[in-house]
Image (cartoon, rainbow, N blue to C red):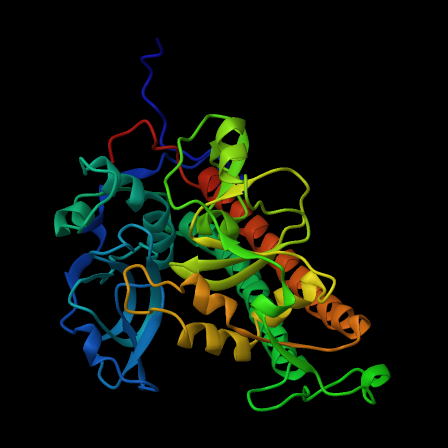
Length: 404
């Protein structure tokens, strides 16, 4: 066993600091003040003058400010505990259950503390909790948290490195927002709005075609059904079993036996080319079955069987249109817990179809291209975040073996 004292230095150190001293062990209360705000969520004002930090990643607005300067803010309770961090210089107000770190001592970079705190605080919170989740943060969890500081110039070098990466991330996130807005515009232009039977934009080769046909899901598909209403007996491997969560995440993490699969799908089974629709909890998210392996579904998902009457990718796109989304929500039980749409109501939902299947396919290809661009951008952002996470682990000392 190695009894040598662990050196408080990072795995990677910029060349000009390689011969500098070890990082100094302090606590948050040694380098900053900590308090909470005095406002409630209901105090927010749309289009207010100042940022208003509440217990979420979303920054609200307000017309008052209780602080003017450099600060770090984090949620004191709720689902955001240990996961939400904001850094600001300027005037702002904040919620009574939001903690504010401020008044950073001389030779301490507030932005460096922000990066260090956001990297290590969640682990500290979990260490101090007997549960798998934490309901609230006590002030001492923050003030007594150890923090390790290099010289001020090394702090600044690390801040500059991470800030440059943050700037790149910001640009890429803005690109993603633009792509999503572009897709939203396409959905508005390519599908008829309520009360109309033609879209605002029609591809030139179809401009002289007749108006779109008005139908319903149960008229264009031979079968629309949901999954099993009973929680199955899961197995470590076997036939994939999907629910709303799997459709949203795209992950396979639950399986059932072949025997149970054959029983559950004895009357109806989802297959390649069918369209899945979420109907409980999350309502109205579509997904074409673009895989050929066998699978089964839970009651939270509905299946629209493929048909010669429609292109499956067209239907997937149409379901995302505001016209369909508005109708499915009108037919849903939004006050139920969880919210849901009954199968009979889903079957009655209106669908507009171009009579020419080539027009359906052209629209589907257009929306699919937008989806591919969005998905590619999401992967790019994930890769950048992963790179940043790895970089932070290299730039800060490894404190995983220490009690923090």
